[in-house]
Image 1: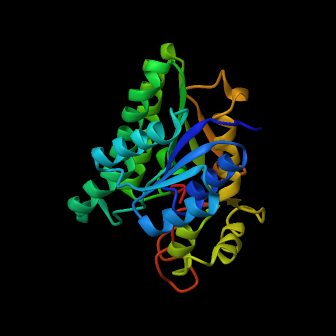
Image 2 (image 1 turned 180 degrees about the vertical axis):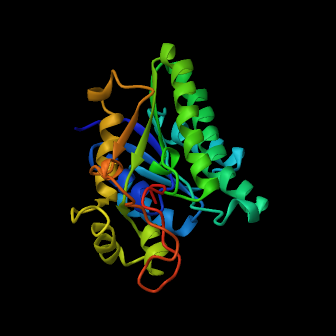
Image 3 (image 1 turned 180 degrees about the horizontal axis):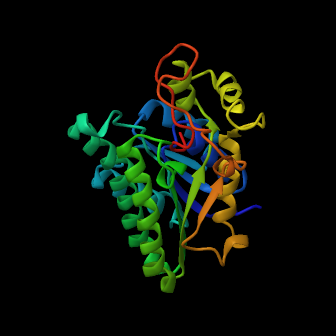
Length: 277
């Protein structure tokens, strides 16, 4: 579905779901600000997309950085139609009784504060136009114990409450707010967590396949399609909703979750429903 001229900010756009979404939107006529703390990688993503993309180094935990991404969209392209608050980290790991609170706070700063700031500054420029879409990336860890670490799970659950609250506030202003919940997704960041090699996306897909009843896992492009749908006129009546994109993963009975130390090398494995990276 072509959206010629529409403008998006995508955080976490240096790889994985963020990069795939930026590419898909651009292919469909959107202009895109690609935002990520990994400056060189996000610049390459924008360069490969072409003149309808801009890149900006953004630490989503810093309000000035998030505000700058929104301002760049308005300055470069005239407005903001979509904020995809996708950036996040797996973050602090370990038992609750030994939690490193500095690591916990750092996880929350990126995974929850970053989404809050993205919504805040998107609303700042969308409200005067009485139009816009905000989408945040959450995780099955928000609703299922044992899928992610405690800090990550709390942040992703917080996104759901925040999304519904902000959706209620902004609905009268013509702004829709939703969340996307990816299940097992083969992305470079998850590949790095699963195998120690960010390029091993296909190998990661095979590892995930074993955890999804032999069905293929999602790829970043699958999640990008769901984001594009929620941002489209076809989803005009959808707000305050969490769209689960997991191929039925959360419906599988029994323990179908990744646990730390379960990959072939015995290293740290990711939980299957982590952020869209």
